[in-house]
Length: 208
Length: 208
DNA sequence: GAGACTATCGCCGGTTTGGAGTATTCTGCA
DNA sequence: TGCAGAATACTCCAAACCGGCGATAGTCTC
Image 1 (cartoon, rainbow over the protein chains, first blue to last red):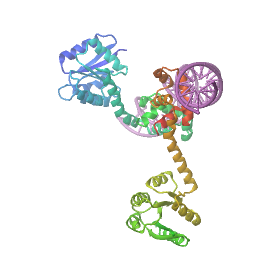
Image 2: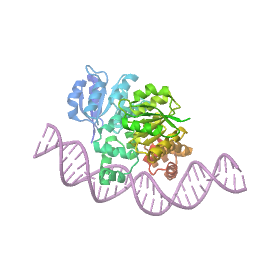
Image 3: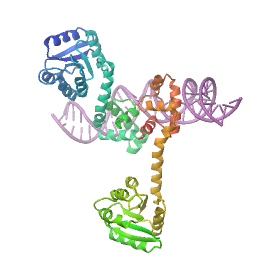
Image 4: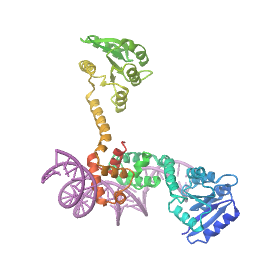
């Protein structure tokens, strides 16, 4: 199954060029392109692409605003900023808005495609590695306080006991539940918090 | 020279009863009583008592707040909380605010007078259950910050990674160790910290 | 009434962790 | 020189944990 890519870019030549590049690469499919942020917001959700290449300089709504909205609508969506500028301010704003990758337009086609793969696999392709750490640090800062808010009442209760050091069996007894149920809740908690162990979950719970 | 005692208590009967009790005991003198925290703050400093019996539940400013203020004004003053509650929260808040004794209202008169003497001599009279709670709390508090100091260099390093959510194998790779070695260290850490899981160890490491 | 979200419980299979014990090497100190 | 502590590593065993799967039942919404 190819990686489905969408493009938001106002320059016709660049947009078409990217589209051709992507469709010409095995494992990639360009499902749609949009010349404006407004257009993207209107039609992109129906396409459900895996990855979006987003220009920053767009007429009307900026690419950064568009990222913020798209992330709100489709949290799973991976977004890569595509720009001629490399200034800290735009990078920073894009990341806060929810973009996970940030590459320059002058990036060679092969590297660009690698970047899309990387992004789709959970990476953060960027001009240099230092920026990647910045991404993680900042996103975690913003998320860690928000992620725990997605938990249900029950899940929160259980997590609070996990974060006190109790084990499944003990929590089950406290709540008069089967330990299987506790495990199920815990599995769901892990998914929501994107963690894989009770220690990691505890750290998120403590906002550490 | 008798021990000069003041009372802050909103219930008239209790306040008068205590006053009579104190004045009827040799070696004690009740110099003043106040029905509210505000009153006490205004007039008590002029009386310069040795000991204050303080109710927690007062109309307006709470007894705990009053303790904080009195201690600021008269650091030498010894204060004993007198209350019907023995919940952890109030006990700790009172102690932090500056109270040195904490006894229940149902305490027999003779014991109460002993407590006042005790307090005046630098002791900390408290009901036995409360004493136990305080001791335990302090032991835990003192330990959690001291226990981690007993760890060796290596153990601290490893614990720091455990507390980031890594598992044994990953830590082993980072330090170029056998994962068996990591587990040996971890077991020694558990013994020193008196815990039984990585989550509990993490909590100690974070002083939580 | 179909589709969601939530809470509950279970099974299977595999990995990780904890507990107990032993052993070797090295270093520093009395 | 010898001993204590620290770091390394291993074995055996059982418990706990994790991931994926399915299942039921209630509630709420469209």
